[in-house]
Amino acid sequence: MDSTSPEPSLYTVKAVFILDNDGNRLLSKYYDPELYPSMKEQKTFEKNVFNKTHKADNEIAFLEGMTIVYKSSIDLFFYVVGSAQENELMLMSVLNCLFDSLSHILRVILESDPQQVLQKVNYRADENPLTEQSVAQVLQSAKEQIKWSILK
Image 1 (cartoon, rainbow, N blue to C red):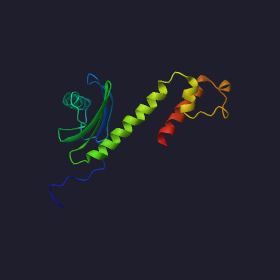
Image 2: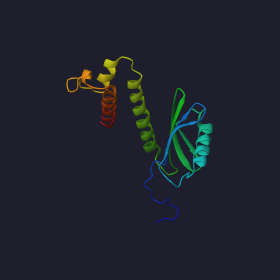
Image 3: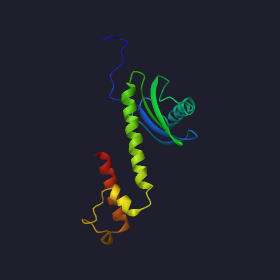
Image 4: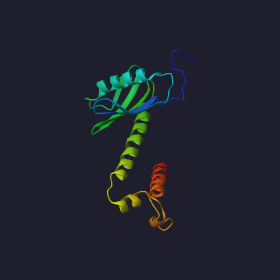
C-alpha cells in the first residue's frame, strides 16, 4: 500500500452541526472523537467554518484539512464535515437527508389545525379514540407516528 494514501476509517461523516444566523451552535454531533476532543476546540472550528461560509453562495468549503458541505435556510446553517479525501456527493446526500427530514418535521409542528396534524402523522382515531386518552398519551402517540413516518 502507498504510504501517502489515507488510513481507512469508518468515520465517513466526521461531524454534523447546525448554527444560527450569528454562528452560535444550536446542535452538534462529532462522530470522530479524535477530530476536536474538547468543546472549546469544537466551537472554535464551528466559528471558523461559519466565518468562511455564511456570506458565500457555494455549497462546499475546505478548511483545516476537512471537506465541509453546507446549506442555509432563512437563519439556520446546516453543516456536514468529512475528511479531505471524502466524496463530496456522499456528504451532500447526508446533508440533504438531514435538511429535508427537519423540514418535514417542522411543517407538522407548525400546522395549526389539529385534524391536519393527526392526518400527517397517520393517527388512527378508530384504534384509539381521543376521548379515551390523556393529552400525554396523544402527544406520545403523535411523536411515535412522526418517528416512524420519518424512518419509512
